[in-house]
Image 1 (cartoon, rainbow, N blue to C red):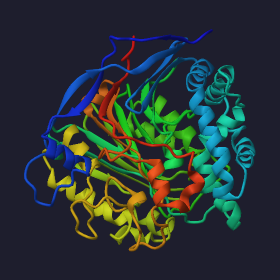
Image 2: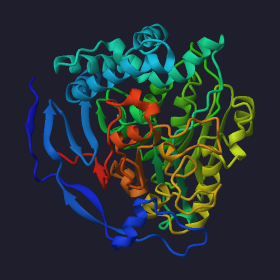
Image 3: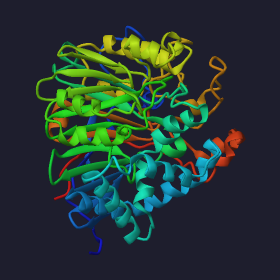
Length: 498
């Protein structure tokens, strides 16, 4: 079957453009930071209709289009069939992903990427049988048919890259399956009841990552499987699960997470997170079922503080999952924030070595724990999608008490701007931090839609050439890290193309 391309002029993607005055827009671009005690919500934004940039590519029942830095991918059908659509339509991005992993893995770990492919095959082939192995095989076959030769073992390792390099491999080096590596990724919150404008759920997240890998997290996948629930999620090329973990399903479930930092714990005999997350998201009818799927055969890899909600009832949940300890909180009137620290004292003290960052506002974890809580209380009763965008773009530095100081301590994180004179365990001006912003409320979740901004939530551009000129210590990444120009907020919705 050939890929068919056509331009769909009738496509309606909602592109969000600022309606505030020029001075306010400039302030928002610098982060939209609001001083404590400021009255009223931020200025709203208008909506406009836009079409995709370029053509829409089809293969079978699947299709993709590009818009404002994002790739929207729709796949459907049986496991191998939808996997083939995925691989065929994202073959160029898969080629670039593999080129990057083959280059950076030796520098970062001392091992070739082939070493981790062999490890993934050995660890997981017997565990991941049936539906998801077929989908993985379909991705490899689809990419190969489009000129990007991949084996299913390549794709399996790609799905487990975070666990392999960040959890399994450090344990191998230390002689045990743990090393307490700090993993500061992402800012998030979920709110409901008296904290939101309409009393329903609002959920927001920005993905923090090393730019060289995080730049591939610009894929929004709409999966319509032959069995289970339809779902929409942010993801990477070739991945069957979200990995950044931002999703909604037609069961009315919505969720996100932030990684638990300073965490140690891994059991190689059990099931990887990407398998458990995808199965939970596709098959769970309720929040409790989702948690049950995640708990089953948990290997402790990619340990997260999950923020979950039922879009219909308005109930929200925080589920923190380590290897030995797990905790669950739920409410219909309140909020939970994500900042890369475990709130559960057993996980924090017994699986994270006490996590000194939790209370230290010189660090990304401690500072955002304080700032996100301040913002939840500041905007209580006003939180909606527009306020959520402002919160994600916040550049207030609680340690230095500066209203506009984008750095590692701000909700919209910018390691690339931070000299780290106050947190010397970190390398100055590291090319990492926030690469996006996503917002969803209950109404959006029921339509399998969310609004997203590629680059970062504040709209600050990243110029790779200028960065490497200013910080030549990172020049080994030159040619691999891409520019991220300012992009607008855009709403993506399932069935945008008929």
